[in-house]
Image 1: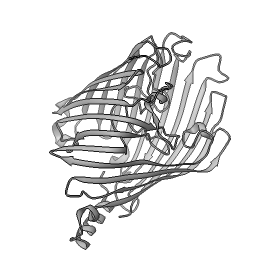
Image 2 (image 1 turned 90 degrees about the horizontal axis):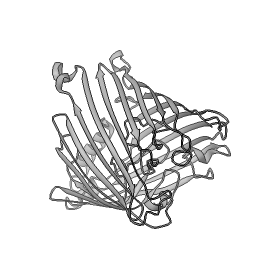
Image 3 (image 1 turned 135 degrees about the vertical axis):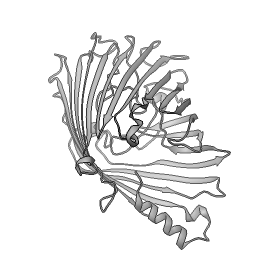
Image 4 (image 1 turned 60 degrees about the vertical axis):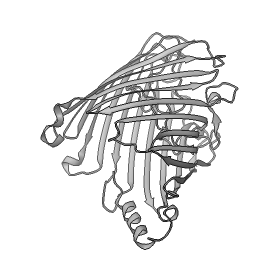
Length: 411
């Protein structure tokens, strides 16, 4: 979505300061505000409630000599109301306090069609990504090498990266990847990956290695069938895909439960027509261990807002239906309902008895693409996760979330 306000500011800079160095003239400053209400009933145990506000302010310089750029983002979340369990919302620190952190601070160099970024930054891959569903996203520290020209028209994408640390969503400080998996070592993560995109066909793979801890390999194939290309691309469309994640302990295997190896495989189809999108997906996880996913949102097609059916031995399916009301004159209004169910053999050693479960997600979004309210996004979510386990005080975990984002280009 193009923000016309940012384009106007950019044009004004070019007109008013044509003789300034591009490093200064092309600099931009943006405020992203976020207000969040979180209310949960955790299987009859705790009831975290948190009303928070904050967001981020980001700075990006122009390029010096068309080669070097500086970028930074300061994030904050401040409690307006927080009960005794509010830290469990992940919108505040574990003790329910505010979080302010310089989540991004990096320098970027581009040369010969390449781009190298060093420092704190966002990383977007299937297994390592921001998981931006709370007040502050996951951010990462290290070096990332990707092609300079990225986007939908790029036929080949790739990444080579070594990340030393990451910042969880509910912390101000960065910790090592091994620490995030409960291993008392200071180990980073080596990432390699490549993907190919052409004529609706996408195939890719990536690998994530943490010394003496864990290796995660991921592969995906996806295809947009061509029969929907008629009528100016407005006909029905069907997308099919499959992926697999292989995870195993490596080296000294210091992670709990080692040595082990497990996997998660999933497949989906997505049909869309006239604003209606229907998705169906299935997944399965190996019996030996849960899949560890603390560094981003799950790449599994059955992943939902709370659970992603990652427990050992769990098979699952997901059905979802969404509608974009733009065709009815309500531009920016969308609704989605999703239902997923998982089942398997309960095993207190490998999956903590969390095998038979189901989740219902309802999501309403209002995001006007233009006009006086451009930059506003209102999202309301209701989640009901049921785990069929007689040992719990209640079978249900319910969440209600209301998130209001507003973006303001300042410079």
